[in-house]
Structures are given as C-alpha cells and as structure tokens.
Length: 117
Length: 116
Image (tube, rainbow over all chains, first blue to last red; front, side, top):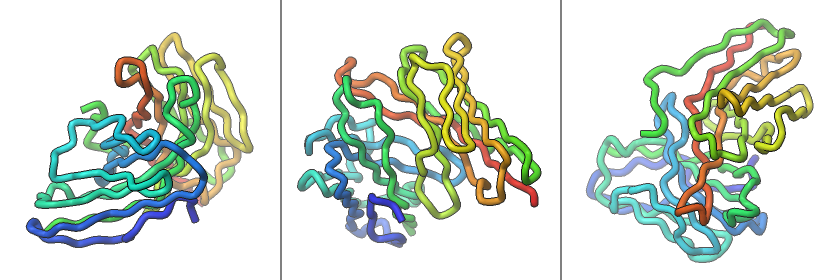
C-alpha cells in the first residue's frame, strides 16, 4: 500500500462525460503532482502544485483541469476527453518544491486507469 | 517530447545474478537523480537517489553510480530475485520556471525480467 491514495482505481467515461480523479496524502507534503502514463512509456509530468498554488502546467489541454482544495487533496477534473487521453493517471507528493529543498523523492499513488470511449 | 521511444528496452537475467540497468540523461544542470521501480498495475516505487555532488551511493542490494562527465546513471542490483522483475525508471530533477523550482523528468525505462 502507498501513502498516496488515488480514487477511483479504474474509470471508463464517454467523450461527453465530466468526471474527477481524486488524490489524497497525509504525509504533510506541500507539493503535489499529476503525471500521465501511457502503456510502455515513462510517466509524463502534467501539473505541479506547490503550497496549494499551481506552479507548473506542462501545456496540458484545458479539458484537464487540476484543483488543490487543501494541502492534502489534489483533484483532476476531466471534461470532453478524447480516446487518446486513455492512460494511467498518477498522483505524487513530495515535501516541497522550493529550489533549495526540492531534492527529495516523489511518493506516487497506484494511479487511476482511465479509459475514454 | 522529452521522453522518446516506441519500445521498452528489456534486460533478462538469471535469478541470483547481478543486474545493471543504465540510463543516459540530457541536462548537465540536473542536480538530483532517482531510480524508481514500477510493477504491473502499480505506481512507481522509490528505490534509491543520488545528488550530483556524489558519484556512488549504496542501499540494500542496490547501488547507484553517477558519471556526470558522460551524463550517465546506472543501477546495480545484487543477487537479483524474481521479485525484482519490474520496469525500472531513472528520473532527473531539472530546473523549471526560470530556476524558481524543479521538475522531475523520467527516462525511457527498462524492463527487468528475472528468470528462475
């Protein structure tokens, strides 16, 4: 079991649906991340939140909308997705993203397997 | 994109042998590197890390070597066991936002297959 919990584990949605992925950590970490992983590929960074503020957006399409309600929670709102958005969506956390203290590993959840039909 | 490759490199070893997984990184300014293990159906799991002011770090059955001159990282696993079978990713910490923060970028990954 990981200390980063993601729900749901699996999600199937149509292209007109709106759904949300949820992530929770209780390690007191102040940085949280969304990564997208296609089969046989490495995780690709989507968003970084630092102290509940969006720090990095890797030019992700607006049909993906992140939200950080508090320091323990991270959501990813999905709307009007395409079949090519089907992937494993990974959430991660780390103590901080300050340049001086950012050399610490990210802790990953087990992901949400998303299928867009 | 930053991660390129249609195929997952595979390393096949016999149980009990030592494994060496290699990784090349591209950014000479990267100052922190991590090895992750990812089993089927799970998220990446931290194995070991190394800062750029070191060239070797040892853990339990694992050793990471860093050669900054040729921008190369390796993971050595001693006495490889069937439970070590997984995909292994190296990751580098790169500057972002004009140096205000960092982002962790993953390498291509290597599938380690341990034969009993």
